Length: 110
Length: 111
Image (cartoon, rainbow over all chains, first blue to last red; front, side, top):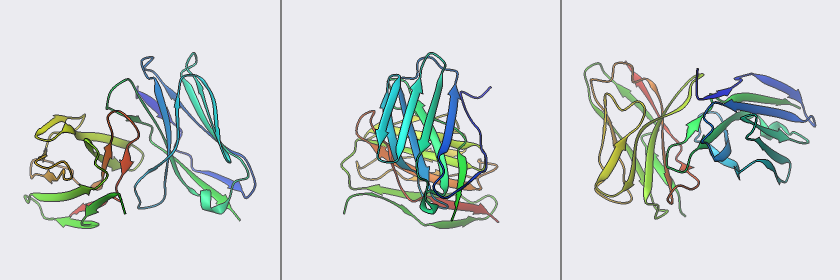
């Protein structure tokens, strides 16, 4: 069993829809949770960075963490074609090593 | 303009050849990392370095080597011992444990 599980999709939605992405994990020592966006043939860029359970909002993006269920989510409201990318969840304990999900490929249709 | 640069963007390797991927950062970050990305597998850690002249193996270090002689530079050598080197290689850097910033990547293909 992988330490971090993420549905690879692909996920295709019409412009303006809400995109819902999620990851599950098995390591209860994970404390910090991140979502990265990666455009094709580019390096990942950090979207959201959260610590502890709860919600964090940044513009059209909302990250949720439920440590009791070992489940994290990312919601994208009012999705745009420019949101078409691969979204990677990542998490770590209190050290340098990040554990990544496999990534979900999202296409927003105009 | 601060950031991480990787070169070359594309690299081709013949069987039995060693190749070196360059990673340079001007963010004044202490920590640097090398990841490998394969389709459907996410990013896997090859090596990381917290300070100059020190580095640790990640999850898939076999067939790779690194050096950290300068704070700004963390080159990765893919040796002939790496049997399946075709992948997208990503370098990253961070301040302590915090946010990792990624470079644009190098795509390595074995001919």
